Image (cartoon, rainbow, N blue to C red):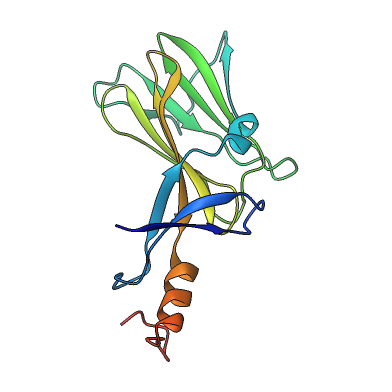
Length: 164
């Protein structure tokens, strides 16, 4: 897969590696290395006491749980409370309210989290509940506009927008 450096005016004017979409059959998301500008928006806060509510999602072995709290619309902060060998809260600041944060168990101790920062950009995270740390972070971009612009530039634009 070819990668080109191109400016992408989503949240900043930084350069990211943009894939060559000329061979794509349909729009898709693409992933790039985690961008440090989002570091301050993702925090792990250890807490003392917290009991799960009925909304808590338990791991397959039911030893741990997490709870995705409702988005605070005033601050656009999303919190995820996590119980393992101790308690922690994951704070996601300045999230994009139109695309709710997603979280689900991967296995007995790992949680996959996808948070959106805008219409096109988000971050995929894998949180280890036992270590209370992220073991994976990467950016995810919606490639729909990239796909459409590439098709148009190659003279293969779809008049009906169906992607075919």
